[in-house]
Amino acid sequence: MSETIGMVIISIGVAFDLFGCIGLVRLPDIYNRLQGATKCVTLGTCLILVGVLVHSGGAMGIKALLCAIFVLLSSPTGAHALARGAHRSGVKLWKGSVMDKYAEDQEGKLDQ
Amino acid sequence: MIVLMVLLILCCFLCLYRIGMGPTPPDRTVGIDILGTLVVGFCAFTAILTGKDWYMNVAISWALLSFIGTIALAKFLEGRGFDE
Image (cartoon, rainbow over all chains, first blue to last red; front, side, top):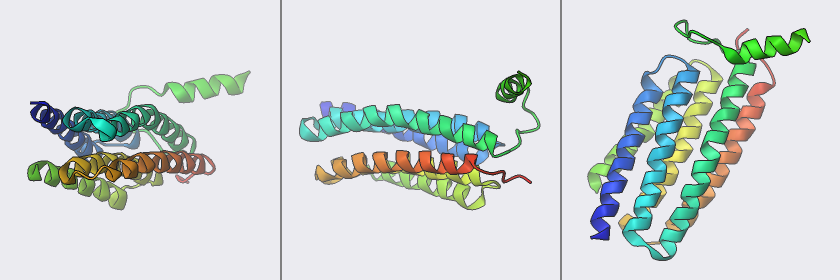
């Protein structure tokens, strides 16, 4: 029974991964790609790891749980650093973007 | 099971497309970051497919190294402008 539930959770995780990667290919600029891909792939990978925990249990399950917590902490942090680095290295926003709060914030700091 | 494996490999190829075709360096870096996270899930799936639990050790190490690599590349990108 737990194996079936585990495989269902893993299937949902793989579907999230697939949608995230389609977003990575289809979206127009780096900030949209980062937004779409990182969230979907983080959730998908965490679901795969939770599925391994439900499927097997034991030592493998504990390791999967540790890995899921670490991915949940580290992947958004890396994406945040990457977005900041991209903005500072001068990558332009997509022409359909409506606001750029980070640039406004930096201008406010320069005026003081 | 084989269908899920093929779908994960398809995800990896979509990431490789973005790494190869990305117009700016941060795009390629995003591809590398996402590919690292995908490989963690791939290792976990291989662990239950083969029943060998050392694949989970590989997954944990890969998550650590991928995070450190992403932070290092982001710091490197902040240094200079690529758009001029």
